[in-house]
Amino acid sequence: MRYGVSWRRPAIDQLNAILGGGATGDAVMRAVWAAEALLGHDPLNLGESRRTQHDRVMVEWPLAVSYQVDEQARTVSVIRVVRLHRGR
Image 1 (cartoon, one colour):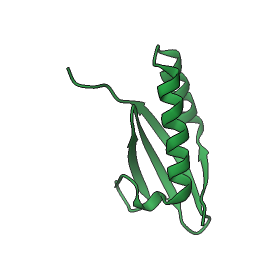
Image 2 (tube, one colour):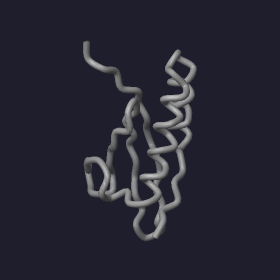
Image 3 (cartoon, helix red, strand yellow):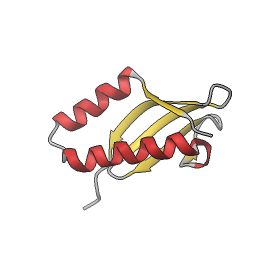
Image 4 (tube, helix red, strand yellow):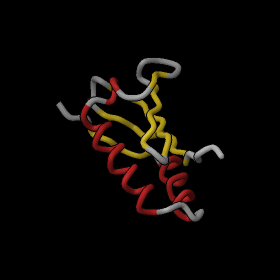
């Protein structure tokens, strides 16, 4: 079964700031599309849990995506996104 994936306003604003801050748009958008595909398929088996099993974080380079899963409604809400940087 599939999960519906939505982005909450703060996550959209964070993504827009990443794209407007000189990040390589192609790499970021590929990461967004890949994350959405993965989250729509099996979100509880991705990444790591945080406070509860339903509060999770995953990495799809160059982004870290925090999200919440509602199993009953079969929905995923992306609540935060940050750009990762390689160590020097």
